[in-house]
Image (cartoon, rainbow, N blue to C red; front, side, top):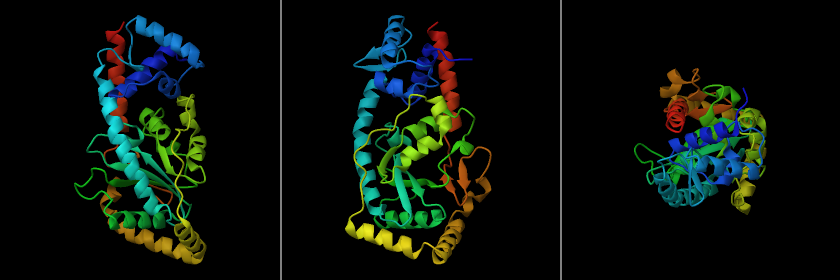
Length: 313
């Protein structure tokens, strides 16, 4: 059954309401869940009608559900933390951008979604050349630990969490959805922030995940500051090792890196590669989300959506 524009608006605002995140009309258009065909001018007219009817509210250019005006201030406060953490993410990316076979670095989770709090860590999503995933993970993890930037024990605030690696041959993540219409996963992909992406792998990833386009037809690549690039020394080092480790010797180094890390990841083995796709450990993807929030978010979204429809009809 086709969606009405009212349903799309309510469902979208309800999802972002779970994270206390009101939207501007431009953001709402871009993030419309399962949106029917509509241009921004008609969307504005529909929003005005819904506001007049008391179905949704608007203040200072933000749209939100009734009785949630407080979320405007929550979002305004989050901007401060987000800017600080993005700056730290770019600094950390500068230390690892020269890692051989590392293709792209994105900021994801709370910072990518612009809902970070003071205590939030900084999650990175890293794309590695196919066949060199374990080597890239070993280098990035070691370098960030060396500079004291990695999460460790209870030290999480403003530190880097390396919870998601994929290879260039595994950009399509449809197989790792928690459910068919995985709303949290779809927005998670849409809201990444590239901080190192010289070959535009973020755009390639969005193209590869056609299922996201079906759910978010108005999606666009988030505009960001220019992608950082390694300096002359870092670029030369990266190139040298990519040539030296391109063939059989590189395969041996990759195998050794895998064996060492699999031992350290042994506590995850019993929970890896299960149906919920919370923890995935293969040669093409390493995803270590012990507390995968997708099903919880979906459940909260559905419950809140039902309450919203009851309260406003």
